[in-house]
Length: 264
Image 1 (cartoon, one colour):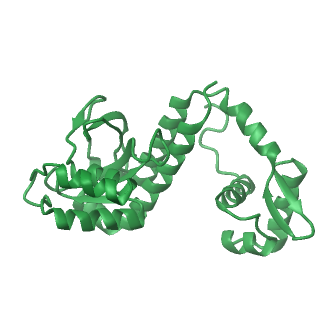
Image 2: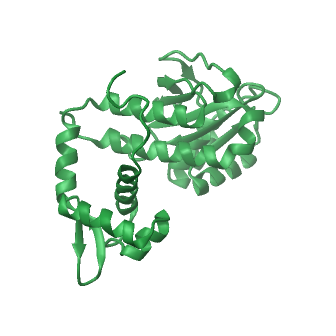
Image 3: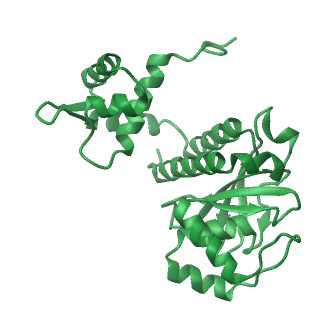
């Protein structure tokens, strides 16, 4: 067995990463000890030990006057050196694999073509416990039509409202199954909901009995050039809809960061 295989996770390392992710998502000038400990469910004493370690390693800075911690430039330099040694495609594949394993469902990444259609550029099957053994046999290069419900709504939700409205108005909408929504007023409402929550939903509208949750990858060569989705049986996904949507949305954000990384 290779080193580390099957080993239990190290709690302290996980907490360090949680602190870094929390501070990375903080748009302000950092957070104080109480806020960090409270959001992550840590005791102040334990949290303080981790923070001091990260400051000593140069990954965090500490503003003593404001009593706030923030990410330090040294962390970015260390990450940049690591990024240069990794292929961007491998990072994208890793994000997809982690998502599929985490939610136990097949995941697809599609490129948005100039005509609005969607081409599958990557896919990963779910984990062993996923989707009751469902296998989505979508080959790389498979093309979905522009009005494939979940992908189309995710794409339109990522565009400026006026642009999305114009595209929808000009788009032919087909009924792929008896459940497919074809009324454009109703579709506009679905797009607005997708814009509000960050991800779109297709409920048995492309394949009977199959549900899809999709999100645009932000900032990847445009506001809606890639669409990430997970797919599975409606019966298995409906009760997990919100959790699955958040997982897909977070993975889409990670894919966007990977796409923006400089090539080595």
